[in-house]
Image (cartoon, rainbow, N blue to C red; front, side, top):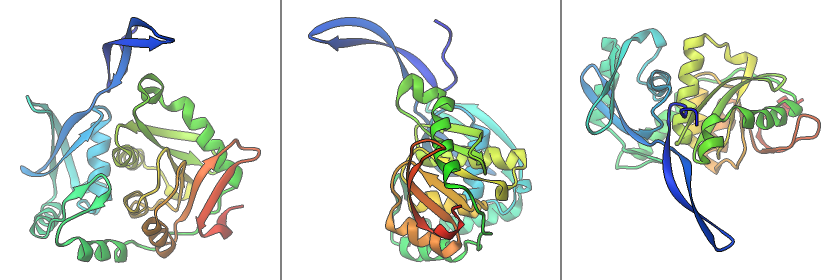
Amino acid sequence: MPPPPEGVCAAQVQVLRGGQARGAQDWLAEERPVALVFNGISHAVMLASPCDLEDFALGFALSEGLLAQADELYGIEQRETEGGIELLLQVSSACEWRLRERRRSLAGRTGCGLCGSESLAQLTQMRETLAPLPAVNVPAEALGRAQQALRSWQTLQRLTGATHAAAWCGLQGEVRLVREDIGRHNALDKLLGAMRRAGVATGDGFVCITSRASFEMVQKSARLGVAVLAAVSAPTALAVDTARACGQLLAGFVRGDGAAPDLVVYTHAERLR
């Protein structure tokens, strides 16, 4: 068999079908601890797919507000360790200052959002600092076309059945850029980093995700200027409130094809043509 893509490993398994067992080779999505270290300061350890990690580092730093601009990141060194992977980011002094301020009132992050004694104040601050987004009009057919096309781009998902994807799509639903990861937040961060590295103009398209749209998915994408977010599953109430406040068109339950898509529009439906 050809070697698997990065982020996938082989495993010998027992398959039971109709009461009959047989040995087989299967593909598993790799899950590695990835430490993000800024100027020697350890900030976070995430469980992630070990691919497109430079995109991940840049996207995470931007979507978390640690980098104000991509040019505040001077370089990234990836180092394998016994416990996982370290991403060593060399950043500006301004970024380092933001990181130190954040650590003084750090609210721990989880897969579902925020926790810790400072969470309510930090959440309010996060929402209030999101800049208003420009109005981007998009055809309903484009959202369905993008979700349908995205399946063929999900290499890791086809092999393992265990990953999420985030895609940057043109206003007619053409998929232009995709990143995958075991975590939905990580997949989005990877995509946002790749978009910024490629110099993508966020007014020319929308982001499509293969997950629910949580507050963090709205916040991360809005912080980088994404005006339209289309999810295959539902949003949360806080995500809807945040999208409405910052001017993001938020759609969920996107299904079907480009001719007759099914979807639910939660905010700024007047922009869906």
